[in-house]
Length: 519
Image 1 (spheres, rainbow, N blue to C red):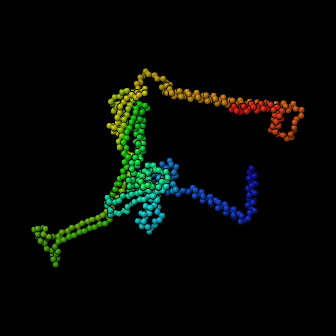
Image 2: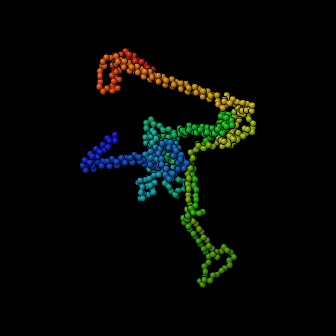
Image 3: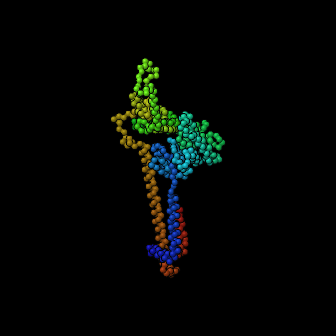
């Protein structure tokens, strides 16, 4: 093998040496171009452009979104400032999917890079470009929804005017016009996701100022259908919260009363109203005061002037208000610049405002002290006032054991059945019996297979023996073959035996066929 490879290599080397200089250059050029193309293709296929998905989120919310993206199988990158980056071509679809799930909870700021803006672009033009690009990005995200053919987003952002009073400022508004495919229909959850996506994309935009309309001009995010769209999810949320507290109380008291020793019912009241609030705080820039923006000082004095020889004269006026004497007045005004921090807080609701707990203990009798003690424990476990807990005791139907379970010192429970339940013993016994039967069946099958193989070997030995006997009976061999191998000789002998003893061979073949069919 090594000799053949080395020979082939030497032939290739000798053939390459015989080539002309131009042919060698062409071969090397072709190899170089091929390697370069392979490297470029690998770099292009393995490289993926990333874009900012969300920026400026809280640490807790960023962690929530990263876990959700990981469950979705999305490749992400996180920058040092906490910005979340995803693949550029998948960003719109990811934003829309997260918006339908209610993420992010806080106002997000897009990282928009305006290619058309430069140093000569005015603030007004930059603001318009920002709005146009934001509208385009929202349209791309909404169009990733299943059933949406096209979307037109229009943002109404008023101009910022520092001379306008805060109470007189116009609200930010947004509208979304949808064109759906034929027979397509959006669910209330999808419409809700569109509203959240638009509202959370623009600071200061309230959800009630977002309008979503269909092709027929009807508003999709209004009316009884939309108001009651989340009823199912609200009921499910209340049910899940109740189950969480019920399981918490049960797991807390089960070590005392047993698994079936109590019944718990929890009723929670959840506030699903969404609220938006804004907080403005001021802080000095330096020390206890800010930076002075401008200062105005004014002083004024009035009174009698001196004589020409500059000798002052004094008069004793009985009435001080007759204009005599000197009067001086001064004023000082200054404006300080301070830091102004405006916080916009969005609360999506879902807050537990009240909760009551009812507990029934499977007991024949309980004292008032015990009931008060367990009632207080239930209240502390659920985190509610004691007056919100109702606790009582009663026998449970269909249950043999009640609290308390009397145990005497003379009682000697069965050592085996006191530890292992009777049903568990039956299951273990049946499993052991089944395993034993399986072992016996496997042993029988293996033994039968071995017997069949042994029988075949015996039959083959009998055939060989019969062939030898037939050969000995012949006076002359039918045919002499020179340089005949053992396999060829055996094959020839079997052929000759079959031609002489056809009935025996046929009977033997029938036996083999029946054995193969019986497997």
